[in-house]
Image 1: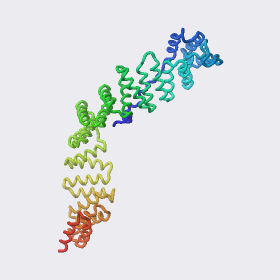
Image 2: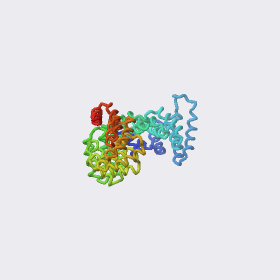
Image 3: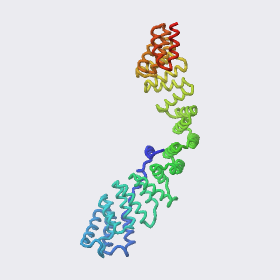
Image 4: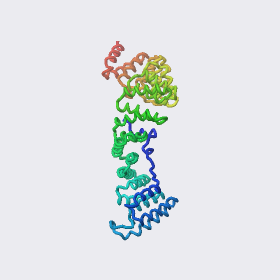
Length: 446
């Protein structure tokens, strides 16, 4: 299954969804005080708030804060829940003082004031929203998410973006289940308000909560409605999600559609090749990778795949071309063996032996190369050398039964009868080679 880390590898990360919520404090305070003049804010408090607002309008936030702090100090002698006719502890004073600190980038002090405001007036949405902003600035994402959520619940106007901000904060805090619950609420209550980048966050949440099938319709929509580089990324995610959900036929159909729409995009030829390989359709896979190679250079792994496919499909000359390209960059026993096999296919055992020798210089005890060297020497009628190679392989326990038997045949052809008899005696100890070795011993004896 596609994991959220893959989205991040495309640059589709949770952090980029965060909307930096910055409320215009002056306008908000003015509107709030005006609305609350009769019922909520006593006249002395209104006068102080007006003075503070004038200073804030001039950008003098610290001076405004001092005016409000001085006013608050006058009420220190009052009981916690006692009568407060002048408004020293009025929630609006706490709120505006919090705004002063927020504008002055003193988040900790702002938080204290906003907390006091919502404690006195739990349904005051603007304080919850500014509190969320402070928590976000301090990277306290879980608290920020909960504050955004309270801001949504307490506001008269249910603005969908507040649910979105809350969910993204929860995701950033690693609380994916809580984020998904909020996002599903957002989809249910505000289906027409969903933006494309919000849907990206919903996909992220579904995948993080291991619910890829629910994410798939949104992935399909994003792959169609986004543009440019982002669209290509979502198209690839869609293709990979089909595969992770076992929808191979759907994946192949989509890959073929992508090829028709974007025939010059190498990524889709690569994807098509991968799908054909999954279905063991080697010839169309080779065609797709060949086209991809014409559009952009193949990666080392892709070159290896093309070489192996050519060999499997009986095109050893082409396979040799690609294997040698690999060998020029990174040579080892495995590539030497494959190149040797290519030369064997086109009946050039001498060239095959040369590559086996090169490979053995890299890995002297490589069992595949040792046995292949013996076989090639035998085919080239270099029986004495072949016998020595097979005996060495047998002593190293490399398919010892076959190695002793081949050593016997090689020594026999080299007219080294005593040596071949000894090799056949060794081979007769192994069940699979016993009958052949005993027949050879009888022929030598006769």
